[in-house]
Image (cartoon, rainbow, N blue to C red; front, top):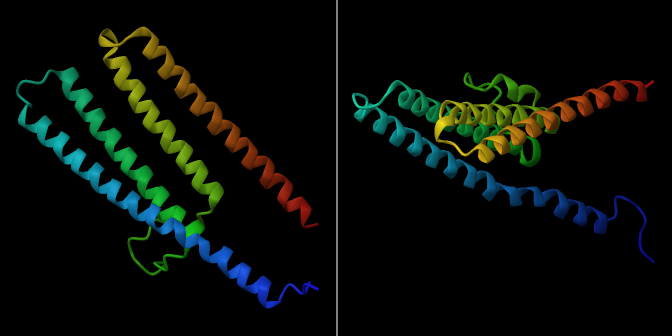
Amino acid sequence: MQDSNPNSSDTNILGKIIFGSRWLQLPIYLGLIIVQGVYAYKFLAALLNMMTNLTTLTETQIMLSVLGLIDVVMIANLLLMVTVGGYETFVSRLRIHTHPDQPEWLDHVNATVLKVKLSMAIISISSIHLLQTFINADKMNETTMKWQVIIHLSFLISAAALAYTDKLLHSVAPQQHH
């Protein structure tokens, strides 16, 4: 007969295997660090291209180039949030609390905070893309523009739903402890 004691060696081994499986995410986070390097390269290449062609670019082209650079920065920030926040939340503590450069948001990161930060970053990136589209509207397909607006609105609705769900969870959680 199987031992139903939660501290039995079979349960303990299974628990250790399940808990240890979180380290399978490590290569994913290391891959995101490599992707950050790709975006750093992309940023520098785009900046160099803009600077070397500065005298021939129109004001609109400069504005589009700058928005492209901001887009790359925001995507890199998103990657950093996912890498640092995800690792800290799901794999292991980073143990950098005494480091002077520790991001303040890392003190209170959890899955919900990470989701909210990610949704806001995605909305910001989508906003930059939409602004680029509107600046370049005379060269854009109307159907493409409509879909970009619909997708952006979907991001906004999703973020609002996430925030509302988080608010509901926080209003119910304290009542459960009484």
